Image 1 (tube, rainbow, N blue to C red):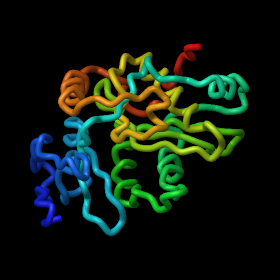
Image 2 (spheres, one colour; image 1 turned 90 degrees about the horizontal axis):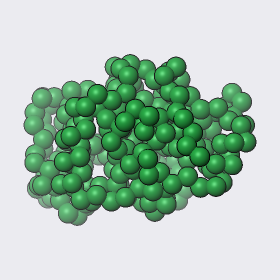
Image 3 (spheres, rainbow, N blue to C red; image 1 turned 90 degrees about the vertical axis):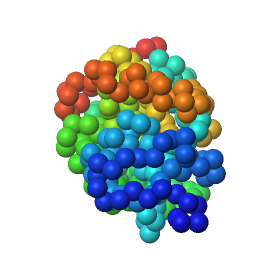
Image 4 (tube, one colour; image 1 turned 135 degrees about the vertical axis):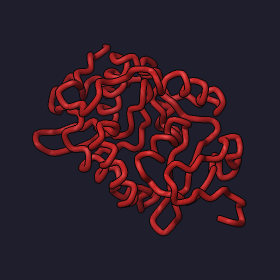
Amino acid sequence: MSQLQLPHLGPTASAPFPPTNQALPRPNGLLAWGGGLEPERLLRAYRRGIFPWYSDGEPILWWTPNPRCVVYPNELHVSRRTRRRHHAGNHRITADRAFAAVIDGCAEPREPQGGTWITDELKHAFVALHDMGIAHSVEVWRDEALVGGIYGLAIGRVFFGESMFSRVTDASKLALTALCHQLEDWSFALLDCQVTNPHLLSLGAVEVPRHEFEAQLAAAVDAPGSPPGAWTGRFTPRVRW
């Protein structure tokens, strides 16, 4: 880390993060390293658009990419195939009923990269935020089997998406679609997808320059968002097709 001249975060959870304009252009958005994953530190980070992303054996790395990948809930692209799967009625969608299991699903190694960036340390940190009513999951079930899902943090009117997974075709798309419909019902401003990839762009995600993303974030994270606490029983997205 010292060769990159990155700021080091100490053990105190209240220690400040560096200004985001100091993030490296390569690798894109790497801002700092070290520190811990205490709820206080994580919440301060996400409110500024900073998130942890690292692998086992590495120190905690903190990122703020430029540009930023976001989905505006009312602009999600839903394919005909996904609509057909929804109308087929052979699945069930819930929220906050299997949070840890959704993280485990997201942590399963995927081809071609193998491995996972969701460490045990990170999982425990998000479970703690879930227990606080801040982190949430959306689950897709086929009969009694969990076949897909998505999880992240809800702060104000921003949902910070962390990861999603599918064990059957399009299950993660069903979870994302239900989540976006519910976020729209709750007047959320945006869903942060962090890092751009072609799959997200095909679903309607767009790239936003960091300074614009941070301005949108500042206006939304202190606004009243979803009902406090678990979403179980409150997650009733209206289908929009």
